[in-house]
Image 1 (spheres, helix red, strand yellow):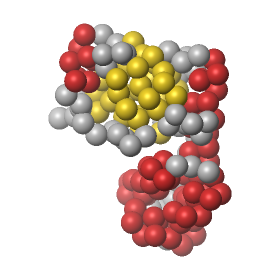
Image 2 (cartoon, rainbow, N blue to C red; image 1 turned 90 degrees about the horizontal axis):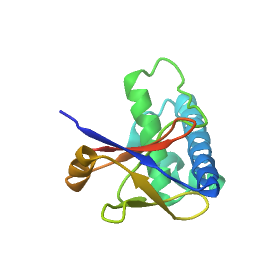
Image 3 (cartoon, helix red, strand yellow; image 1 turned 30 degrees about the vertical axis):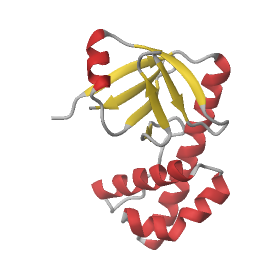
Image 4 (tube, rainbow, N blue to C red; image 1 turned 90 degrees about the vertical axis):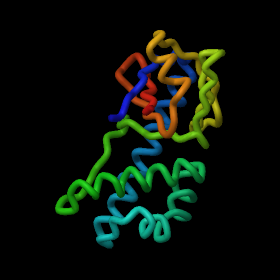
Amino acid sequence: MKLSAQVKLQPTSEQTKALKRSMQQANTACNYISEIAWQTKTFSRYALQRHIYGEVRRVFGLSAQMTIRCIAKVADAYQLDQRRKRTFKPLGAITYDDRILSWRITESQVSIWTTDGRLKIPFVYGDKQRELLITRQGESDLIFFQRPILLVCHV
């Protein structure tokens, strides 16, 4: 059973813009990767990575780990169905791991990668989420719901 802790980020207006730009850039890269995967019928994460990693970094200016996360997102989408080309919404959720997102629970703050550089953003959460965050492992999804911006941490 997979548990999730949902926290509400409290970014400034400039940080919100940076997060949105990052989501848009990552999802644009995912659409590009998906197009290449579809054209070449290359759906494996590692085959895609060997084929397109350097190009995606160069064209989209993503960090190394965000490029890997985008390739994984596309490969995972094609695992569900390889009969139709996958597309991604501009503000679709993006997954962060410990290399590009760090939790500072005692300060109620995350340090998160964006296309504008790393940002430190405060967050709020309840007691139950705090318990889950203390034992968390793995990835977190950045999700934009107009306002607020949420991080869903998988425990």
